[in-house]
Image 1 (cartoon, rainbow, N blue to C red):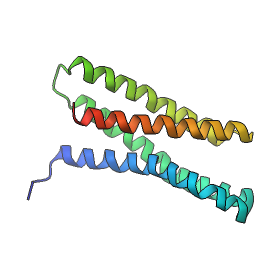
Image 2: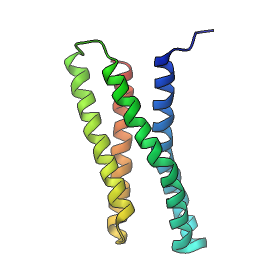
Image 3: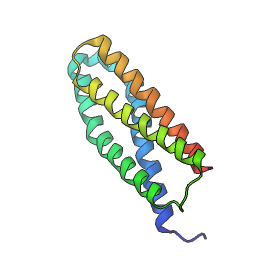
Length: 135
């Protein structure tokens, strides 16, 4: 058996956090239309609040483990790695900002657009993380 290491634990928690954040958004997007039909706005609010209780700690954990990974890299990182990481970080911030706007809005078009943008940004972050894992 391969021995566990501090790095493998960090990577595990980073992947777990990303899975909760991104996967949760996909699940919620799939559940909301049916829930809205059966429970109305109260059901969707309850679902959103429950998701937020799990998603925001995961978002924070992804940030912590991502920064840990950055500081754990040997110096100097290749330029391509650094650029990719910078873009990933900017998209991470954009995903969080879109999620905040989504949660705070009361206008349905804004809720739809910010939810979609949050998911798109989050998927891009996930993909860039995959690139970094191989870089």
